[in-house]
Image (cartoon, rainbow, N blue to C red; front, side):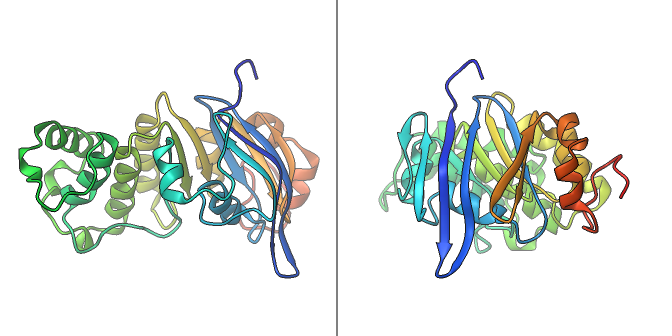
Length: 257
């Protein structure tokens, strides 16, 4: 890794009472890298994301973003430091329009905090940026529709739009293609590649086709420990990884049990 890592984890652990969910993860993510975390169900992938994004505080260990410690820092502060995430379950404002959802993210990314007396309609740069993002993800025709009425795949697309609207250059995505058809998944992959161009992407995903088609490097998490990190072909041919996935429904492409 020629440049200092943008995101770094050092012996990160997380216990929930007697349950040791994350058991000492050490990992470096390079600037501009698309890095996938895979593993069987119950491996601790979402817990690890929650630790990185500030929803959980590590039991021990350290997480840094551009060299600054973010372990235990509030999620909104981490977001303002340039890290944004999407969730495994769609996390949108269902009582707002598609446009309003994206505009919320744009407001903060452009330095506008909440102000009851401000007329948002007069903030032309905010309006223009919102339209630009909606157009880029293919939702411009549904801008004034209620977010609650969107089809499932469009709700996932809206969440990606909200994630990139924050202006963060480190993006975490938790199973962004979950529940999508093959055609919807293909569209989502193309959108993720476009939306994260020039950014650092850390993704948790069960669809191995998505993982191997999108990632520069892959880390495999099993029982709260990283058992392997490497290029896609290295992971595909790793004996420990093959063993971890034997009998799991998410088989590695090209790997026979």
